[in-house]
Amino acid sequence: MLELFSSGLFSLWLRMAGVPDPVRSVNLVAVTDTPWMVAPGEPDTTVQLTLQQYLQQLSKAGLPASSQGVWLQTGSAFLASNQGTTPLPAASLTKVATSLVALHHWGPNHQFETQVSATGPVENGVLQGDLVVHGGGDPLMVWEEAIAIGNDLNRLGIRRVTGSLIVTGNFLMNFETNPQKAGALLKQALNSTTWSEEARYQYSTMPRGTARPQVAIAGPVQVVTYGIDLLPPQTQLLRHYSLPLSQILKLMNVYSNNVIADVLANSLGGAQQVAHQSALLAGFPRHEILLKNGSGLGVENRISPRAVCAMFAALQRYLQPRNQTIADLFPISGVDHGGTIDYRKIPNAAVVKTGTLNDVSALAGVLPTRDRGLVWFTIINRGTNLDGLRDQQDGLLQSLINRWGAVPSVPLAIAPSTSARAAAASLGASNRTHSVRSAVEVNTYQGN
Image 1 (cartoon, rainbow, N blue to C red):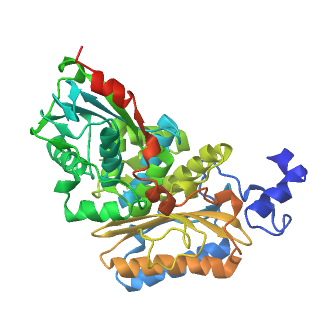
Image 2: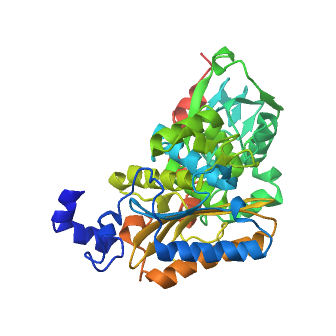
């Protein structure tokens, strides 16, 4: 970092982060750095005063300061804290840990694979046997994705199945994790004559001209848990690949989807493994994170405010050399709409994650400022007036912006390469379903 400071690159780096004056403060050496864990120290006097005023407002509402967690830092510089190293019920801030471990385990471009096979020949558009779907843990298999699979089966000449729909592996559909129910939803999606109103609506959001699949399956849904290799001989028809992991995480975090988070955490080895790995990756003490699941449902999920900031910073460090930022995983105020930050008064260009339980309201992320560059923050409140707590969180951030100045646009250091809307629009894209065999090969297959 000292070499960077002594070169002309540092001023360029600061400008990318929205900081106009590279010699404003010694602390600016680390303004856009994504630090390892920051130790508590002497707080910034003005920031601590702002924090105390915030805590006093909560106290007047009957909320003791001992139940409120706040951590603020910029680069490697500690700014202020209240219960900053104490594990507190973190609600959906837990998804920051799940995102961090998933990204390191699979990489941002990883795609989950769903395989579709047949146990018999295809004659005159009729599969004389069973249709077998082997799930690969895709947490975002939804109506649009299933419609794409159905249309590819039609392109292979398959319009009827005399046998059953057999579901194996780790398969879920429309966030339904029960494989029997997930299979029933898939069976419905493959045949447009049986669509529900919800399915018809989701189809209406797909590109104009998208075909309506017609794959009528005569038999019931069967769930097989003993392995695909023990089924009758099959011919593989399709391989369907999910959205890239970074887009799945973006949608998970924008809408705070608990099922996606729990499915990913379970695939990673469970909540304890996520907690252990996130502490290692972000460099904070293991006792500052206690997890029951990967989503944050339940007050048993406890994370210190400092640890949340450390995980955000670890994600940014991982993504920067891969030409992505944390805004590719989390909602950015003023850009992403339709999720949990709608109707909030969070300053524009802040990249955040929200968290909510019956008596918990949390907000964390990074706030770009004119004078202090990127300010990493976590706010965890205990109380039941959730709307009031959200308003006061937003007010605290606005107070900091009033003190340090807003940035005119999203700094490049946290600018997204895509949006949640673009990721959602990619659901059902035909280029992620690959035919293993041609229509001619499928229709000449005789089951041997």
